[in-house]
Length: 271
Ligand SMILES: [Zn+2]
Image (cartoon, rainbow, N blue to C red; front, side):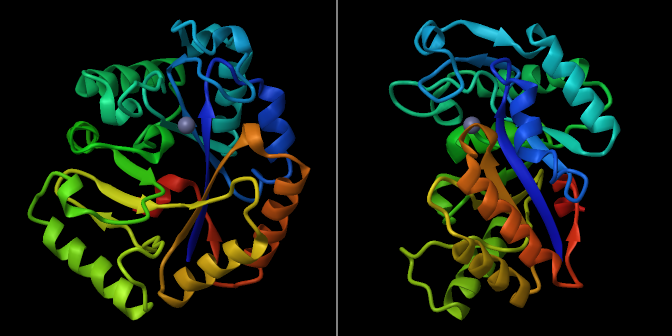
């Protein structure tokens, strides 16, 4: 059973000390996939200075040279991998970036090129949608670039995605899993296996956010384990306080007790 960790929102506004604070005693055991924003535009959240919440200025990652040097050293020491997390991560009046931005193909292409040039040691193969939200157009743009998607998809809505010859079988798999776990259409579901499509693959993550309990995570983990599946935990370093860190460490200890668990980089989930 593969077990990976993904952490979102590393960008120009990230202080390397914050990543160190959260993961210094984690990344030697589990490498962390940092979903990174190449040209961050500020919005209202902890860790982004208030003066940039509404200024619409795009900040290239490399302007934070302490961060890029730090990420390179993490990658070289196999403590981290890098995924693409949107282009600017900006919110639009009618949706999140990968639902509402007009030029999604360009954003994927340019964002990927930029991250590959800025952090050359890293082979980037994963896309994480900002706010876990993607339109049909967003999915098509990311698939066309050949990137796999790590999301926190709770459902599989055929109307919300482009169709290819693999889609009906995936729909069937999800439906069977839903039935075998006695879930209704409205119940939360994180499918514990990779779903492969014609041009990419997708895997859903379990979120660790303020208020998430160890019990919720172990329940999700046990369900994936019983189904012969894999597991990925997704969180945001900027909201990990002492209480969340305790949940993270307790949960990792729980998972490590199972002999079949192998801690891997998120990229290996798709291998
Ligand atoms: Zn994000």
